[in-house]
Image (cartoon, rainbow, N blue to C red; front, side, top):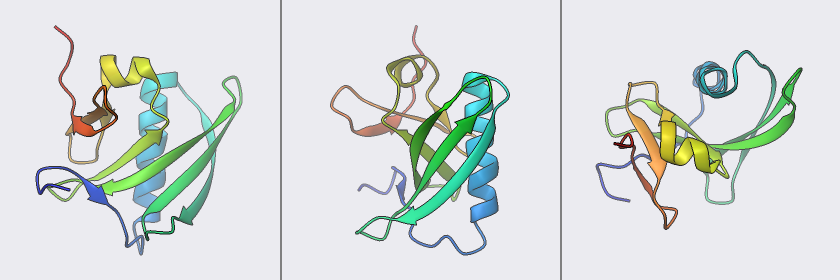
Length: 114
């Protein structure tokens, strides 16, 4: 990873409430009001992920990878990232930056369509 890109979050101590609030905000922005259930788990490489179950009018499951942004914010990147979110909105981090994936699946700063 280069220093100007988010890096995997490996220390979740005292940050789980921030991750819950961030995921709630991301999904509310993209789907409208949602009720969520969270399941935090660690990947083999030490990176934290969250499996979210959406209940209510919109239902489903979505995994998020938790990342630290270069300015110290948190990014919860949905995996897989739906195409519409990838090209039209990007995903907001707690520091106000927006991120997406390029056509090759690499993490990039989001550039709004022109």
